[in-house]
Amino acid sequence: MIPQWERDLRTRIWWALLQYDMAAALSFGRAPVIGSDWDVPPPRRTPRDSVSYEAFVSLAELAVIQNKFLQITTKSGSGWTQASKPPSLGRSQLGHLTTIGLELDEWRRRLDGRNFFARGATSAPPGVRSLELMYLGTAVFLTRAAWDAVANDDERLEGVVERAQRSCLLAAIQMVDFVSSLSSADLGGYWPICELKFGEC
Image (cartoon, rainbow, N blue to C red):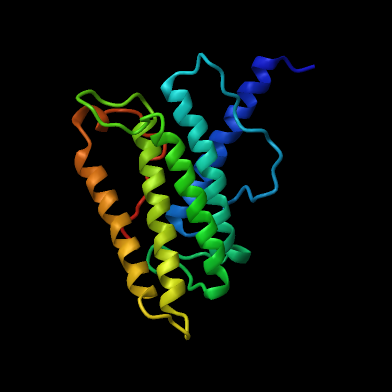
């Protein structure tokens, strides 16, 4: 029988690998290596958890949302490259993207309810700023895919493309504002997934 501490450690290692895989898949425009058929429970929360551990668990939850997005945009391992844009999606996929967007918004609301991303005079605990970067990057990719889906639709409804463009622009502005707000202490902090490049969005 494996002791509880070792089960918890194995679970955290697995989720760390999944988080990295989802981030790399988004960044490099490929399907995740791990896939989507897993049965590993999420990392356990306890009342004694540090803010950094809360960031880790929240990033695990975000990885599940990212995986749903990647299942739509990287069918059969197709994906996109840094030199190209994400694959075009049709109206049939727009409903799925909307559902994922609502799930991402709900995830953010739960963290906002605890002032998780509040910016103050001091730097955030390790892992918090990188979690926020992953959230913003996911929002940029999601809004870009939705914009492409409505822009490529033959039966465009009036105003829909413009609203999709505004959503994409807002996500990009939030990313720029976030990067601009980072302090020296933030930049010297813990960035577990630092090679992500969102410039092609």
